[in-house]
Image (cartoon, rainbow, N blue to C red; front, side):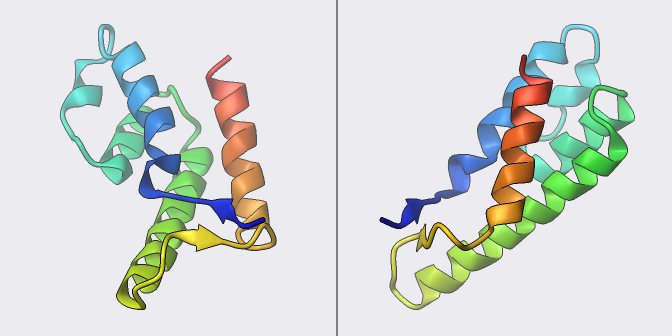
Length: 99
């Protein structure tokens, strides 16, 4: 069965982290896009810079695939074998950071 991936797959983590820390770091809610939110989390020391960069690369890879599928008129579904390492990294980061 194909794994459903939609744009929202990465958004909740960085947005939740930004909102959660916004009280002490107001700059975190300055941007609404995922890439700059991840930059802000790294700049505030809430997320390791290397993790932020890797999450940004994963987001861009997922978005690129989503756009390609949309241009082909296909749903944003990928096989379980696609993006395995990226999904594992995102999941591990989510579990570690959102504990």
